[in-house]
Each structure stands twice: as C-alpha cells, then as structure tokens.
Amino acid sequence: MSKTEHQHNSQTCRDLLKSLSDYVDGTLDESLCVEVEKHMADCDRCQVVVDTLRKTVELYHDLPPPPTVPDDMRTRLFVRLNLEDFLVAGKIEK
Amino acid sequence: MVEKRLQPNLSLQALKTGDTAEFARMVDAYSSQVYHLALKILGDAKDAEDVLQETFTKAYRHLNEFEGRSSIATWLYRIASNEAFMLLRRRKPDALSVDEDIPSPDGDGEREPIQLMNWCCLPEEEFLSAESRNHLDLAIDELSPALKAVFLLRDIEGQSVWETAETLRISEAAVKTRLLRARLQLREHLSQYYAERLKELK
Ligand SMILES: [Zn+2]
Image 1 (tube, rainbow over the protein chains, first blue to last red):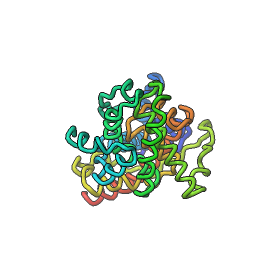
Image 2 (tube, chains in turn red, brown):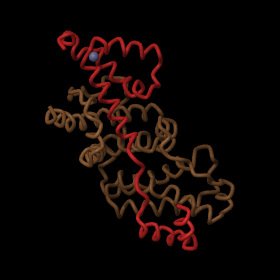
Image 3 (cartoon, each protein chain N blue to C red):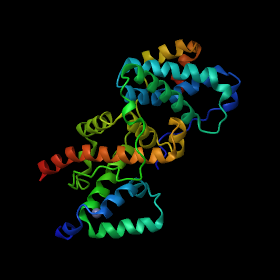
Image 4 (spheres, rainbow over the protein chains, first blue to last red):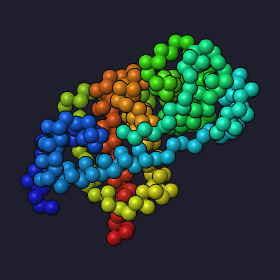
C-alpha cells in the first residue's frame, strides 16, 4: 500500500481520470492505454478507481431491460394513436 | 458495448407509407424504453406517460421526414428526450440551466475520487440483490438532468457516443465529458453502499 503515498494526488492521477471512460470502454488509444497501465502498476489508488469504475459501468450494462408498459397504459396509448384495431394483435405477437 | 436491444424487424418503407399495422408494431417494440427513459428523466409516472404519448404522436406525424440516417430507436429517443426536457423545464425551470453549459473539459474539471475501497471482489450475489438494484436506481436519480440523459442513452440504452450526441444535439466531446462525470458520480455513490457491504461481510 505504501508505494502509492509519494504520488498520491499527483498530477498524473488527475490526468488519468480524464481517460478513464475511454479506458474502461476499450476505446482509448493504445499508447495511452500503456501509460494508464504503467501508472496503475505503481498507484493502488488509481487501480481501485479503475476497477470500481469498470464494475460500476458493468453493473448498469447488465441490468435487465425494463418491463413492458402496463396493459392499461398501453391501451391508453393505442387509443390516443387511433390504433385500437391493433391492441389484440400486438399482445398475441408477444 | 453490449447490444442490449434486439432491433425488431420493422419495415421502414411500410412505416413511411403510413401502414398502421407496422406503426403499431413499432409502438410495441419501443414503448417500454421510451416510457422508462422519460420516467428516469422526469421522475413522475404521469409526466412520463404524457411524454410516451407525445413521442409516438409526433413520430407518426413526422415519419415521412425520417431519413433512416440514424436508427429508429435513436430517432424516437430524440423526440422523447426533447419532450421530456421541455416538460422538465416547465416543471423545474432551474433544473437544466445550471449545468447546461458545462465548462470545457480541458482544465482539471473532474472531481477527485473520494471513495477508495475496492469492492469489486464482493460475491456476485451481492450485486443481484433487490437492495443492490435499488441503489443502482437511486444513484441515477441523483445525477443532474444533463448528466443523467447522457448516461441513460449511452450506458442503459446502449447507444453509441455518436448516436447519443445526435439524440441530445450536443457534441461528441460533450457526450464524453458528461458520460465520464456521470460514471464517476455513480462510482462514488455505489462505493459508499458496497464499501459498507464489504465491511459487514468481513
Ligand atoms: Zn494514480
């Protein structure tokens, strides 16, 4: 743990912060990736931020899709759109 | 990026010629995503339903103008987010003004990370609990509307940076800046919760 103390809060850590979204998305330039990884090897603090940021994004990506809208809301929507004829059709298709 | 939604096989040509059966299929394919996007932005079920109805009413009226340059989803999200933000401005006039013009990302714009506990290694079932899911929701609710919109489109709906920029009519650079800020804030929020869980489990 103590290896990070001397560069805790350093400018490098702050610079790295700006690249984190791209880094966890895998869209960061390769040369910058190397820099990020080199820094993380020496800085537990940034390693934790990257790990937990990646996990945060993963948790949201893995959420199940929202449930379909309730039947009564769907009915009101179809009525508003003059689509009453298709209320049943869509239900069966699901 | 995970492809979250299967694109239903809708015929653009049928849609544009006013085929109502095809339009009904489009409504069924996207109503749930449109509704939940509006609900997240507005935080009110009645308002979200109004946005849902307005979105598809406008979509039907303007289908002939849809060029297919973006996906139908992107096009619908744009209408929906416009409607939602219009309503939000009416409900809370100050909600958007504060961070509508976020300062350019060149300075040290990002807040220092505060939470530094590594909770990644928690057992997987911790992340699947109802309580955990609830915290994911709460964390989104705490984002400002501008950050929330970007995060919802990009990380929840799985839109690309370009599509998100198109939907919200902001630059791709602004999408990236807001996305980073949103994710960092969510990380702080979730860290508070999961760090507690980590301590309890030890
Ligand atoms: Zn660092």
